[in-house]
Length: 274
Ligand SMILES: C[S@@+](CC[C@H](N)C(=O)[O-])C[C@H]1O[C@@H](n2cnc3c(N)ncnc32)[C@H](O)[C@@H]1O
Image 1: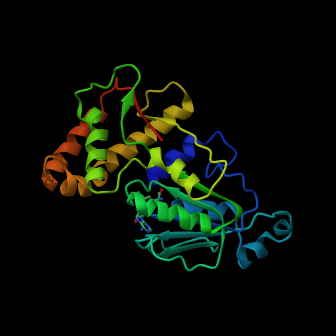
Image 2 (image 1 turned 60 degrees about the vertical axis):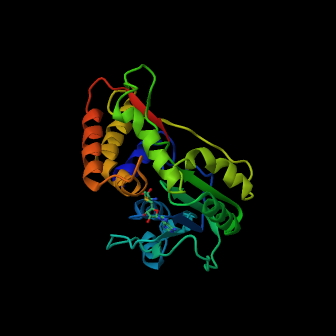
């Protein structure tokens, strides 16, 4: 997950704020849904420092700096961190249960939540987000497309990597929680009431093959993200919803080992949308 966080920072490293695109300069409250280890929430909290002790230390500067915000992160699992900035609050909760917070948010952020919800649950989540925004607030979501592609034929159509996306999306559909979030989120966010919804697609490389320095860095990190994450991405879905019948854990490990081997091929110019 840390590699995933780093990947998105690098992809937007040529922008003034690589943490989010929403044009908010003086947020008061920001929510990160499905925050995981809270890495994004912690970085955003550091970007908008607040809390009495910080303000005191900042002294005169605090008067100049208008941007002071509270960042909330919510996840089913408790965060592994023992240290948090004073303006970062990570809570254990189910995003599908009733939202009881009285705070309204300037920005609600979600990232790598594909496969977390059924289509009806996604509708519910976006409606909850919309209803809990300040007027003029933003929803921002980053999701990858798990299908691997190449533009130059370097991806063998018979390889495991070429079949990875179909295998994975098929399993997620049998689970009722499709991994098609990237393709469905814009329409669902609009259906919840948001207007002027913008979409930005990256062709995100896996590996160091791009000539462009930013994309080479992104590809290097993405390669780590994939090779270290494959087993974790696949184990639950394939052992429960694999085809033609659920796979054993050993079958999944053997499969992900072979996919990891394929990822090492030097002449592979592969990418996926994100
Ligand atoms: C792949 S992780 C992404 C973590 C983080 N957003 C990031 O980008 O590093 C997905 C997270 O969503 C959380 N999640 C899934 N369903 C949830 C729910 N109903 N309520 C809250 N969190 C949920 C999981 O516990 C997991 O930590």
